Image 1 (cartoon, rainbow, N blue to C red):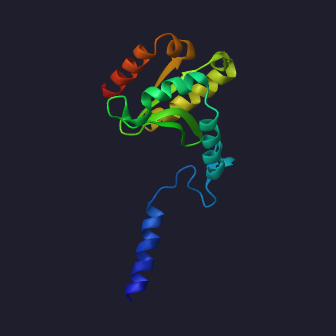
Image 2 (cartoon, helix red, strand yellow):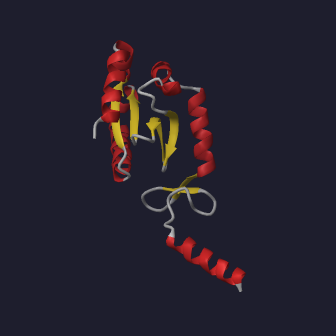
Image 3 (cartoon, rainbow, N blue to C red):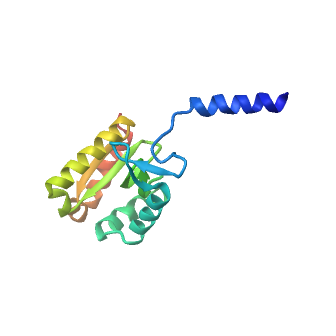
Length: 153
């Protein structure tokens, strides 16, 4: 009798929990049309690969963010969120830091960035963007702006 109740309770709770992208049976990640774009496993593999081949600018900023150096906050680099991989993410402050190089001047890339920011905003995640030149020219100012963004509501 107890086991039957447990199974019933499990069924009810599993139906009540909404499925999210990447939480499908095979860890599939869907695009906005419901089509499978990649599996969760491949997203994790892609983020690992991106961490291994970070740009000089990303490495420069990472040295200032890693190990809770910025206000004691934990940042992750090349973090998968939904179907995107963001450059840096602080989950406690729900803040994404994106570094933009020349590729972000492309119109198609701008559309992709806007789509990503809209999805993140829906999840109440704020995004702050910097040009690579800003990081190289004045890393201290960039870190101060990230710190202000973290603690501003």
